[in-house]
Image (cartoon, rainbow, N blue to C red):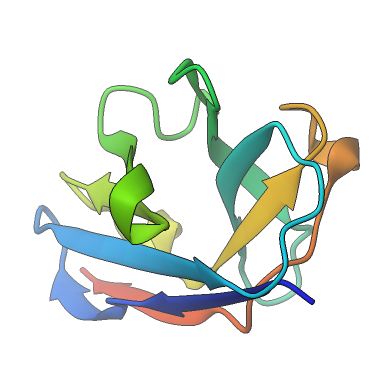
Length: 119
């Protein structure tokens, strides 16, 4: 069974940066993309960034230009570099696997890492 373990969250001031990491281990079923989603209290989960096997990236409008998703295939790790953070970026961030880059096709989420942005 695949395991995804996120790390790198924390408390940062508005305008600051954080880099999240997600390490994948265990048996690998077929998937075509990895991605990061987030969920703030009282809000729905939002898929914010995806990266395909071919390295094609996609971002939600809310983070475009500020967040960058990347991967190190040798380390089975995907990253989310978050710059110019805003208080509204505060959420638990999850790493997941997807059959496609569509949010409905994502699953196998990790346990999440908390990101808190103070104003």
